[in-house]
Length: 320
Ligand code: MN
Image (cartoon, rainbow, N blue to C red; front, side, top):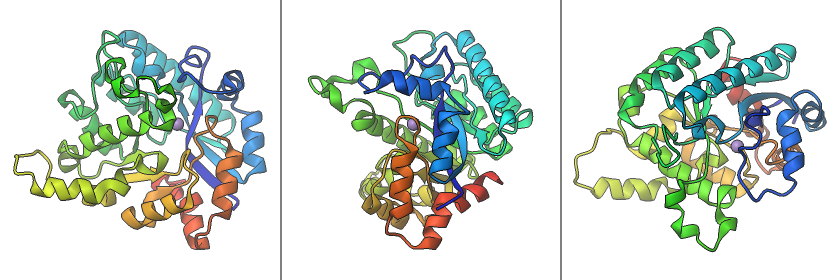
């Protein structure tokens, strides 16, 4: 289909382009594609019917910049660069802010600046943040972030929770199996658990209009939601959240098809969440527009469903 919109589409600047997970083939080509905005990228978009990319910085970049002042400064410069790129091709690009979660007040300020001054469409954050030392991990349900979530609700823009690898001291289960790190599996476990922490924190009860986007068809959480909820229903311990996992998924969460070109998995996600909550994405340049678009354009789904997922849901969510 023509006119596709993608929500998980990455770029890098010289300072962050080295921050990509190890083990990728064609690492040099990947770096070139991350740094390029207007040439190879637009050519791929043109060739495969993609009108618009909402661009975001590569992972983990800001989140692993554990010196908070450096994180604040780097995020600001990356967002300035992104805003300049969007201004050159507003017909093809929009942006998600990179945020220095190491300093929650600065993250609020940067979010507000990016929305109000630059018209950014939300934020994309790469999982937990290291703060003060590389051995720390602060997850986004932490109480220090609740004013940030209040601001996200007030600004009425979505928050995209993007993967990163688990902390170094939490990789025991992958010993001897380095190929299971990153997108093969470890990203999913890390990000799904982080997402469940958010859903089970009470944040979505306190800020019921918050919008959370998760890539890779929801990191298996929609598929697993019945089993998770079934056990939550039988757990007598007091807890800070009021709704069921399925209720949050259908009220607060959107997922994208980034890096996940499976029609049976897509149909399952639609069945669990509703077609309005699923949107096309490629995960460029870690995946190709060619692979994502060729799969999506030919997937055996009704044409009205393809139009919603490929374009119309994103138009509605981001007022495009
Ligand atoms: Mn990605």
